[in-house]
View (cartoon, rainbow, N blue to C red):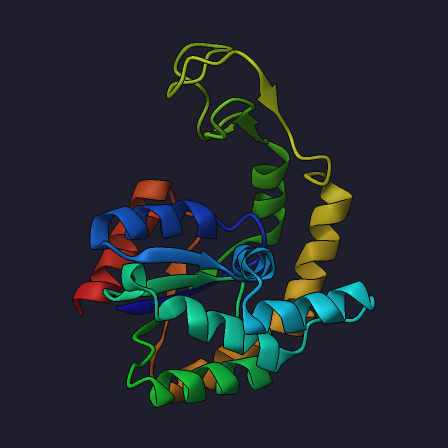
Length: 215
């Protein structure tokens, strides 16, 4: 099964991707992680990407698609994978589809996590994580069971991202609606687009997604 999650920063894509990954034996893929791994490994595509990066240029779509192509042919992706943060443009979506067809695979589900911008801002501003194991929490939606103690590892130090503030959130939302949201009609035409309420509880969003997968 191949899944793409869409939604602005803070919509909860990462949380749901981790859940789907565990429950359905898929691999969560981040283009940033794949890019860094390819550069570190010195693969053909990684070297091309490094050349662009060293020159201060953006890594082209064909290189990114090539890196994804290499990664999804590894054994752990045999059962499927989840893409979060890609594609960001219609051109990337078309290139991804062509690449999957070439490999004899197809995209199964594109899930849009719809949000309320104001409520989303509150959600993002309240996020924090354990400095030791990186477990994520929220001031009101997911506090630690014991105040000041991580539920998972027992750590007592926590961090907040510097860019988790209202001004930055507003800029991220504007960028998402301007650049990435236009990709959704492309997938709607393909019949693979589904929407869930991204403002619902983590459990309810999971239930909505499971209903999509079961349909």
